Image (cartoon, rainbow, N blue to C red):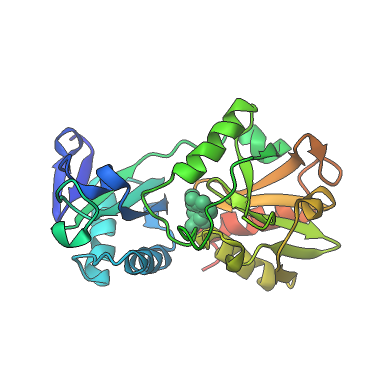
Length: 288
Ligand code: PMP
């Protein structure tokens, strides 16, 4: 059986899953989405992803035409229909089809799509040796223009920074905010360790509040580490003992170089490795 895609309540063969070219998701990037992992057939932190999706939809005045419990079940049944053991779910809600103009009152029928597929992971050596990243010249969206807290279908800000990373031969790029502070990477949140304290930018720095970020903060507190959500400058990363990124796809991945400068001793640090191991136990269900 070909992969089954959920479109507005129905499971459809992948090649037949289609939306209108008048959909404002396509025309204007008007919609919201989630990327979610499946580990051992279980959808990881699904409630957190569903909550964030509804929050983001509310922020853009998009009413999801399905109740939370029904959408949660739809994700689970799409994963089951595709017999997915380990993979990735893309949950998308678009504004729906309208006319060629911005007025949301002239759109109808928000579209709900759930794709459950395999995932391309970072190569293993990046976890073993750590990533080298650069600072992008593209700054993160100003929160007063389009809040980075909204996981919207408009990802051009991140794509432009990702192009800079790729051009520099890197996997990720650090993005600063409009004040010059550290915000996040193009698809990952950032953490540093300095003198045993774990630090990460607060949501007010203009970041997406990552589900993985929040899970890792919880794991760090379980491990009795001091965690501080504080504004960071690039200086703090250069001077850090350790640095790592978190994200649904990347999980916990060490960073050993920023802009060609070595961080700490240039190897994935002990706190990073411990948190990565704890996160793996959590995803593989050995922690509850
Ligand atoms: N920041 C951005 C800009 C992202 O797109 C993502 C998700 N890919 C993250 C951070 C990490 O969020 P999460 O842990 O919820 O995947």
